[in-house]
Length: 408
Image (tube, rainbow, N blue to C red; front, side, top):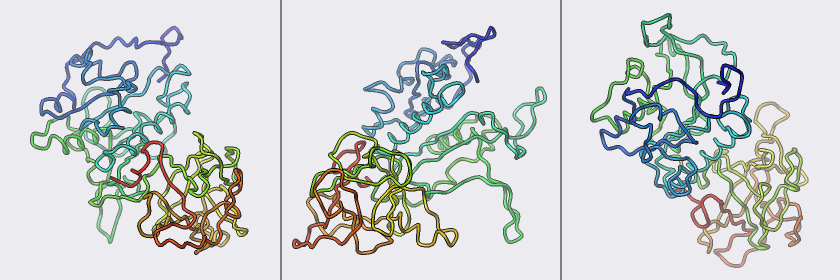
């Protein structure tokens, strides 16, 4: 909603006439059963509308507090059992970050990125479930009629249906990558399957199932009938060598220079070079699992992918797919494998090879030392020491630190 009062002026504080209420929340139930929780706010949050938490400074904390805020606790692996984060709801630019107009949507997405990276880089990543949700559909038209749901109230003309669909992301190493959940009723082998829906009360149901199963609370009929998110979690921990989403740096060990998008450009076709190591987005890259032990390497300047062409040059380009004759063999040009030869001094040292040009490895042109040399794939160096990696790249993340790249 827009933060404009009845006279058309911007609201710089919450002027709602709502009074503090006494209705029990999920946080009351967590406290009663000694489950740790923190509600992280930006200046003020909706939980302060509830009488028990209006002046709470123990369980309601500033998101960006350098010692007890969300980012600080995530970095230490010291988040409580349940964390809830409110964005900055004042939407007058440039302060807001809740993705609601007229706030700058880039600030909202930057906030989401900050939270996701903090969770993925945390020492507790392997036992964390992060839900990124919106409270409304943002005003976009939804062509699908809401399905029927448990009646919430008999007062007024409230329909016994769900509301409009809203975006939701489930981030966890216990969720199979790339999967989408939720569907209409389907007919499989002529057997009607029940529809699978989640709503906002699914969050409460998930928390209760995980932490309050010995004495589950009742929080409305809609909550009682909701699906919890345990059905989207698998029994197998997804633990690739590199964590998703977070930035990584590639340092060519021989010359102590980093991989970089030339000029920090965001356009497809920009070449990849080696440069002196600096704190720059042009030297940040992320991994995407490409299957079969291969990864795609995504640039942070243009969200494009490292690609090799027929002249063996490496540049950034749009994501290739396996569909259509014109795309034949193209996906392999963006798939990279990371290989080690036995034991090495630095556990993060890899030779990087192309799925399209097997046997060739990523290195500076001519294996030269000069800054600015473009990267190519070519024949590896001859190695005389058994445990040495040819044309080794040292891979580190500024969010994790040296020596702790692999999953916990």
